[in-house]
Image 1 (cartoon, one colour):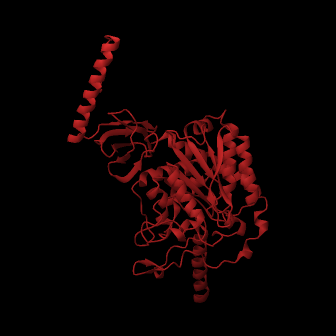
Image 2 (cartoon, rainbow, N blue to C red):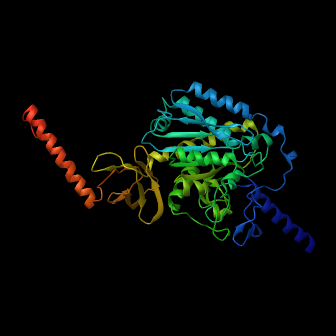
Image 3 (cartoon, rainbow, N blue to C red):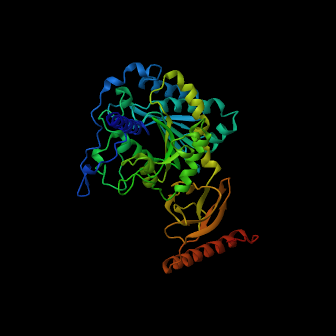
Length: 457
């Protein structure tokens, strides 16, 4: 009996490893110890292990949109729903395929003091469900924004950007990596290890995402994956490469966001593997160079990684069912930007104009920058707690206030006073003297008028 029992243990161990390797978007490729030498990176995990392409044939994609079909569908949507959308590209893949984006808003292409949300699908080429569901989402909003309150609220108060396919080349090749066989979810700069710091070595799809975040101030986002059923949140990696829970500064808020998706889903929250249908990435298994952590650190964007289908390539006739399972989750996650958190603008008491600054919350080591044009901020926070929120602008006195955040969102504008310096005071007196002289001359010309009272209150 010893030999069969040993074989059984070996089989069970192999089955467990196989399950993990295909979960959370497939082969995780966490960094092995041998990949680091003297604190450096040997580069062995940037490319996947050599793959056999024969196991994923063209028949598995029957009924799915080809890249050409997807482009036609995106442009057709733009024509059909031109009143609430615009179509644009953020770059091209290795093989030159445009990375098309659908923006949905009542004022597409215009800057407004509203939060922006992005959905990204098909990060891994062999996970195509997301690209299909994102077209379902766009068309559903277009068809229902005049009659459904949730769709109307999103169109009127959010700028929703949808990138159906980040990795069209990988989709064509029926494999995880892009045309250079690089896993795009390991290609971003990492906070713990010196990965992907060479700009010239990054993939064009990665650079496109990074430039996108420099152009648009996203409040939150999510990428759609396949191979499991769970809402994953930061951190994705750990400092010592061990598998254990490692929360980011906004851990409570991320858990709240992940729960919104999970509990709105048909059956994600009833998972037996993940309590509540959510997981911390590092607790599941660490990765490095991931897009999720990079978004939060460098873009100030709260991103989730959503595993939306246990089967990476389900039959195409299952897609409508998967859409129904995920529809309310996808909508509610976008709408959460309006229903929770603290939102407002920062103004100068001197000029009354918006001033560019940042928002911090006491006890949370993360800064959210205000928008460049309107100085609007959208600070996501878990409801049901007391927070001390501070606005900071260079050259101005910082101001903080305590709030109790209920279930609904809160609007909180800040009016900051300029720092008083000797130079600034003298300039103020000089401007005031010129203003009084001009006012005196004006009164001599037009006669006395009713005095105007200016209040600083």
